[in-house]
Structures are given as C-alpha cells and as structure tokens.
Length: 194
Image 1 (cartoon, rainbow, N blue to C red):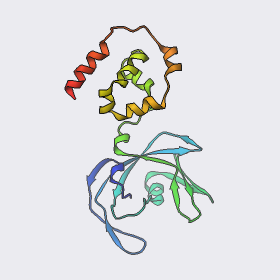
Image 2 (cartoon, rainbow, N blue to C red; image 1 turned 120 degrees about the horizontal axis):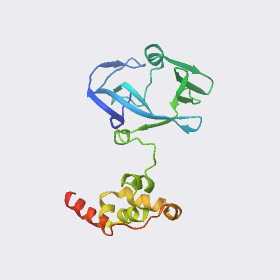
Image 3 (cartoon, helix red, strand yellow; image 1 turned 90 degrees about the vertical axis):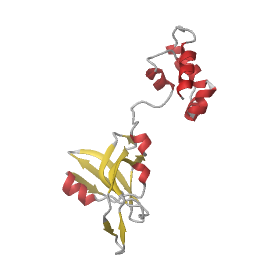
Image 4 (cartoon, rainbow, N blue to C red; image 1 turned 60 degrees about the vertical axis):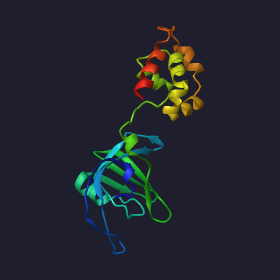
C-alpha cells in the first residue's frame, strides 16, 4: 500500500476499507502496479514490478505485506538483525535495511510512472542519442541538441550538455560530416510539428 499516486505504472479505481493498527479505517482509491528499482549489495539490479498495490491516500508511509509475498508469491524472506532479504526461486530480488526504530526501508528507489515506462539499460546521455539517431556522428548530435529551440522544448538537454563532456568520445567516434544541413532540415520540420 502506498499514498503515492504518481508511482503507479498501471492504475484502476478500487475502493475498499482498510483497518490500520490503531483500529482506524481508511479507504483505498485504486489498485495497480508499481515499478521498484532495487539496490542489492550496493549495485542496481533488475527492476521489479509489484502488482496489486493499493493506493491509499490517507496513509503516511508505505506498507509491504511480507506474509502475502511469502504465502501467495513464493518468496522466502530472511530477517537478520540489520536487514531483510526477499528471495524468489533462490535469487535475491530486493533487500530492506532495518532501522533502529524497528522499521525497515526497501533498498532502492521507486520509479515514477513517467520513468517506469522508459526504463533503459543505457544512460540518458549523448551516447544514447547517438544510437537513437541511427549512429549519426557525435558532432551533429551535439549540434542538434545545442539548438536553442530544442533546449526550450527539452530542458533536460541543457543539463545533459553541462554534465557531460564529449571531447573523449567525440574523438574516438568522429566520422566525416555527411549530408551537411541534414539536421537543420529535420529541426525545421520538427519545429513545425511542435
């Protein structure tokens, strides 16, 4: 259960009563799936999609049912003094750190609905854009991204250029400039579509 609506990858309305530990009753607003990107032993591992997650806006924190995972999903859950391991078919899918107040927090991050749809094994950098533009040379890709109209439409490009230097990659992968003005033409067409 979670109060965070923006975490859901899929969502349908679903209203049911939920009795909390203090005997109060709150209601769910919906149910769906949430994508979690675990960190196991300090490394980001394959994302896990949690299904049948209830959206309960009145909750103040997230709740995960370990018993449901064990009884209905075949998880083996091992609790030690400082951590919890969640294993499925012998593989640790995710872990949780136990805090001094006897609460636990999953190790990793929840992907928002926007990022859940665009999970990629490649970092979002100029190398990715080079690949997406059919391996066009780095100089033209960088030139295209630095055009002010694109920076206005896609502010993340500006951050990308500030955070990454292309000098080493551009030297290694530079090819001759083919079809001068090709990207300018594409930008003009895209400007009309935008």
